[in-house]
Amino acid sequence: MQIDRDVAVPTRDGSVLVADVFRPEGDDPVPVIASIGPYGKDVHWPDRYPLYELVANNEYMVWETPDPEWWVPRGYALVRIDTRGTGKSPGRLDLYGPRDAEDFHDVVEWIAEQPWCTGKVASSGISWLAMMGWRVAALQPPHLAAVVAWEGSTDFYRECAYQGGLYSNGFIDFWWDRQIEPQRTEHDGDDWREVLPQHPLLDDYHRARATDLDRVTVPVLSAANWGALHLHLRGNIEGWRRAEH
Image 1 (cartoon, helix red, strand yellow):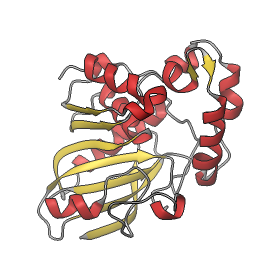
Image 2: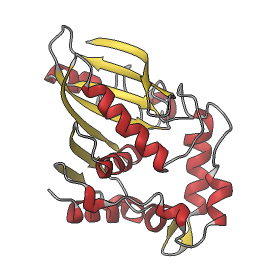
Image 3: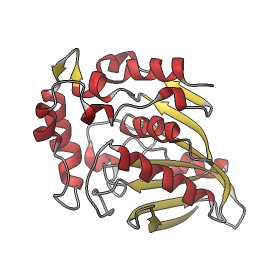
Image 4: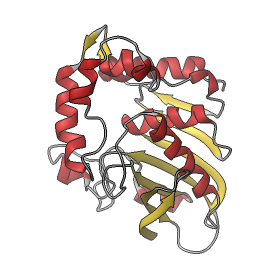
């Protein structure tokens, strides 16, 4: 396996995102599986959650991302990207906003232009990474070939921020403290612990973070989990129901 660390990926506004690329040895182009998230592409999974029992534990395991040791020998490349404003990617944090989705679009198109890519790029990952898969699919980048959404909500207001109309403060506070704050590169951008209580209704802030599932036209594998019915189940069902497979 060939590994390229901290690769700079350009975006439409001139900013760069930082990625790791895992691919088979040699020069033959292969299809690519991409994931983008705010959890830190360099954070080893057991270091983050040592109590989890992993079926396969290796030095490349990162929270909720595809495992290079499984996919690369099967003829795929993996690309992991730090969300703007987290990990090694500089810039203003705008989680799940329009810029966040556009960044993933630009990453997909950049990957497709690389000599080690066949021009086919898929999105895959769990939870947040699946949510971003729905988001980028709705933007219809020309080289996105498929989306594999493992437990990925699609309606930020109803499924994440205000479940049943009630602010999900317990989850948001815990998640932000544990997952986001340690990975922020700059303290620029919205802090959901402060911003979300100011938007109790379905306003423009939340509409900007709702995925237009009717624009998802690529093949989709939507994998739901009854154990996460309060957060992701509805999104997986709506994604499968409304996407134009």
